[in-house]
Every structure is written in structure tokens, then in C-alpha cells.
Image (spheres, rainbow, N blue to C red):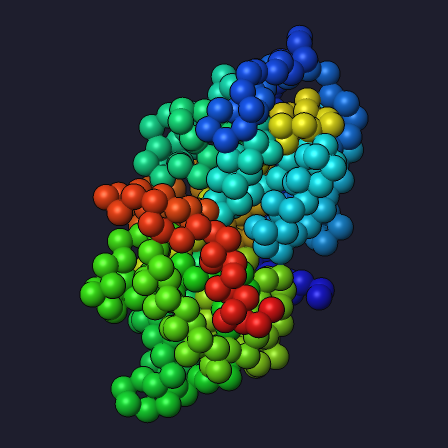
Length: 418
């Protein structure tokens, strides 16, 4: 799809600042063999190899070909001599599979979400990094900080740091303001076959994210509406709790017009009228609002979300280019461009003011909206149930009685038939 033009034009061009990286030595290899011990630790940055092979979410590596106003890849290539090649993926499952191709030696790194990061760490697929290589880590928003963060378990494991934070955002409720009235305050409009004793008026026009991790959204809804289930964390579910989630999603399925994984599919759906309400990413709102009457809300039950991390393969063919890319993407000027293009918040808090500046008049107010995850607001970030990989460890007195991600995947196939 040709992406819709923004309603608000970018005012000026943000200057990109290259990462300051040591060039005196090559990457060193630490001990360990995967899982909780790093398969490899990168502690220095050497001469760039001239190539960089990335796996990324669409919109994370713009080179000016979609819009000349958004290009943070070309300046990096000029500064480092590292030619960037990108393979885009629509789901975390795709990213994990791609990262493991060729024994992990085909791609240098990935912009992984929390439902992929822990799998890659546990599998020894990604290496740890020495944080001293990345001075800008000190400017990362507090919950994601590698040293003091309260919401960083998706990339900090047993004291080892696997990658650098990039963008984050919620999976909020997007709706057609002319069709969905009054404005929704609950996820019930997407889950319940009947509302107030009447058939759901949006049946056949509901959409949802097309991945097994979406089951956490249903768990979050049940956490609020069925306390008897005892759900405390939507990613830590016993067999009984997961069965309740499956039943809710099976009841929801007749309401669904389409599950989306490529964000352009949802943008198209809201523009052509086949979709009226459903879970969405900020980028979906950013581009759908140019051609459709849409808005977004944080429902009373809360939201799931994602915090993406650039991670380096333990067997990266071009490790120095990847480490330079990681340092580069931590810069506030780079994250501001991503935010303006993608509609998300940068992990570097200094990017928020630059996003506001990029919008010009009224930018400060725009950045403090749900579209930009209330950029820099640590309280809001801590309220998001960030994607993480479900494991058998419940994280509490229930011990190893929770359903791991492989079970989630089986159940998702059972629900969707895909």
C-alpha cells in the first residue's frame, strides 16, 4: 500500500548525529553458552565491515524512499561505510525464525519486541553488550533503564544487558468516530458478542492483532472482568486461566472481519470501512487519520504494548557495523525522526522535545497524547503490560505451572484455524 501523507508536515529537517564509537579494537568474545549466561559479550567496537544485515519492523529503517523527509539510514551509511540491508517482518515469531537462520550468522541484528527478546536470549541467539559502549543509555526513560529500570526484564537478564532500547508504545483501542458512538471506554466493544443485552453493533467490523501474543489482551480483559480467575499478569497464565482466554477469543472470532499483522492492512481496513474498531499501534493511527475519521483511547482495563530493542546476533557476520548502528539509534535525533514517522515514543527522553519541535506549533501538546505514548511519561510506560515471552515459570508461588509460549501458539492456531 502507498502510505497516506501526514496531515501535519514536518517543520524543518532534524540533524542526525553520528554515534561516537571507539575504533581501536575489535569485538571480544565472553564466556558462556546461551540461556542465562551470555553466549557472547561484545565489549569493544572495531573497524566497520562495510555491510549490515538487519531484521526490522516496517517503519524502523527509513531511507527516504517512502518519503524524502524521513531518512536516518543514509546518513548512517555515509558516516560508517556500513551498507544497510533490511528484511522486514510483521510478527515476533517471524523475527525469531529469521534470526536463527544459518545458525544465526545470516543477520547481524533485530529490532525485537519483548515476546521475541526473551526467546532469543534464552536460546543464545543474541549477545550481551558492555553498556560503556553506549553513553546515551544514561538518557533512556527510567522504566527501561538497563541499570535502574523497573520494566526492563525483556532485555536485561541476570544483570546482563542484551541490546539497546529503541521505540515503545501501547496497543490501544482505535475506532471510527462516526460509527462507534459513544466513544468506547472499554474493550468490551471488541470482545463481547452482546453489549447491554443487545447484539454487538460492530460485529463483522472488529479487528485484532494477528499473533499469539494477542491472547494477553484477552487475559488483561478477563483480569478486570472475571476476578475469580485470579489473573495477576496477562503473560503468566495457568491452564485454567489460558482456557478462559481461549473461550473468550473463540466467542470473539465471529465479530472479527480480519486479524492484521502487517500494519498497513489495518490502515486499509479503516480507510475502506471494513474495520470500525480494534487494537492498533500508534503508526496505524498516524496514517489512518489522514484518510479516515479515527481516534484512539486507553480503555478502562488498560493496554498491552511493546518496547523494542536493537539486539546483536551472537554470531553476527558484521558485528562492528551492528554495534555502531545500535549506538546510532540511541541518539535522540534519530529516535525523533522515527517517532515522527512512526508515531511512537523514543526510549531516549531527549527525543520527545525534538519530536515536538519537528511538528512546530502545537507540537508540545501532540507529543503528550496517546499517539506518542505520552512521550517521556514514566508513569504511563509503567502502566503498559509490555509484551514478554510466556514461560512455565509463573513468577510467584504457583511455580512452574504456567503455560509457555509453545502452548499459546497451539491455542492460537486452535482459535484462528491458521
